[in-house]
Length: 409
Picture 1 (cartoon, helix red, strand yellow):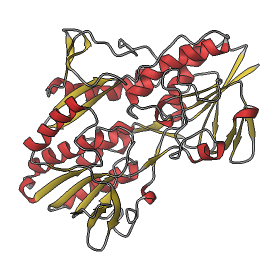
Picture 2 (picture 1 turned 60 degrees about the vertical axis):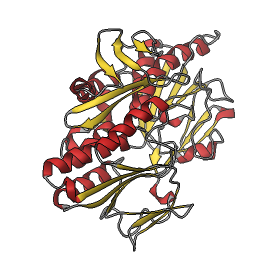
Picture 3 (picture 1 turned 120 degrees about the vertical axis):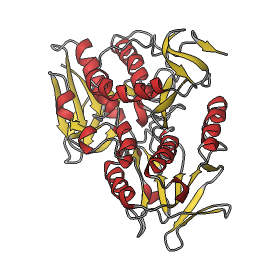
């Protein structure tokens, strides 16, 4: 019996467990998935919690609900991978042998990487919203906050869901306007990027939205430390930004065991061929989602599009055929802009976001680089799609490859 081992049971790993169980003969292939946590989080929903739009129960379910019959599940942390031996060692010392390995261990927030971020104000006046604990603590804080300097700061690139901090700033504008204290809340968006986003056309549009909503932007800010006593963040050039409430996007890192395994870069992201999605040194190791170092967004849509590529290429590798699927870095993101509206961007390695319609040319129903109520509903609908279609590895009527039809150059 041959063995497929999947490390990580988040979005990407769960999708692939479902896809590969359908493809690989049960009498020939044993599939095992390993994860240290039993709870599955709908992470895009964390953004909605601080503003009272979602609660904890809206974003959590048991991981066991989404594993297909015929997949072995082990809940354990991982010590290391020995790729030369096709072996993974768990925290308790138990070893798992594999013929094919899929790494889907995602990324984690590491606030301890920034001096002072996890200081005495952590979860008192300094928060993140990328963890359930941070989102819930911030929701409680906002219930009674009377206003002041609200600073949204990205500490370092890359990080998962690159549009989420912008969405947070837009939501904050609408939230405090509705509460009647927007004039008492000064919102500043602080980023290491030279602008609001990484792609020029999207940056122009999003910068205009920030300006319209009276949200100041401080670009090229590379944070050195958080001064808890004087409540300010300081970058390496000496620029200081004061805050009364700091909402941080902490440094993101790959899984710790990647460092022990010699498969990753200096941030523990697995070195991955950006087109085949194989680990660069070992052909029987594939990497999906946030765990990889491919140069595209760490977003759920990327994992979804990449899953189809890995499904095909892994079958090619198993059957000894030339790999036939090629990943183009396709990503798309709904961006909440507040007041029940949103926008949508669609791009890949080589093509920046363009205006037009998605997913069907000329029909949509969603508008690219356009602020509309329908795009907002698309974001809300995605939660149902996530739980009922995406995680279960079911097909969706969208192409894994970015399509130019319907887009305006």
